[in-house]
Length: 316
Image (cartoon, rainbow, N blue to C red):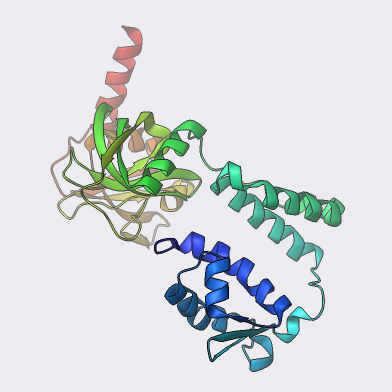
């Protein structure tokens, strides 16, 4: 019997257990546990605390899967909505195709074949409607780097990263206890414990120049995920007045407060983890942004000084 299963392993087994039990018209717990290498306690928990709550709106008895365990024998009855094949409108099919492509981009290539076949069949059934599905692309992170990080998360081993910090224009080598690889707003991120910073950090995977696997077990396990950006409490804050043309800043950057002025300009409060990051943002915004207030003294000509340095670098 295997050790305690992960959530992914439990879901995989459940999807096999349910139709098998229905086809057998019931089965003993020990038989299911042995056949599917499913620890008995986890099997009972998942049948009674997961499968029993599977259903569709309005979640009445006829729309829920029924699970009954009596004298160690399991009986499963599909809800009434299983009686007929699922029928989708073209719009629903396109959304399902889009969701499937998203999952495909997140998953393991070695396990993607069944999903790929299903998406191909769905695309053929939709015909021209398939064109309305969105082709999801997440960042420019190298597949080899993602594979190294995912393997380290699964194995719970440390990784060494050559990481470029955009805000400080710095390349450093870090040892990280990886916790999770995730995507957010079109980019890939690694959440983990950074031994160089001696704290939790979130790294953009497309800024990892090299990722090297190690056999060293992690020493700082983390629970939950990290946000793609989480400023420290002592990071200085800056208040900017943005022209309406620069409203994209609110959508693309984390903000702590947003309000609209009487003149139509937008007030935003943002955390500044490094002055070079703010310089770059102000250079992008040009006359569409004005620094109104800062948590630490800033040169009045911050953007102009940064532009002068860049110009001097090009000339040299």
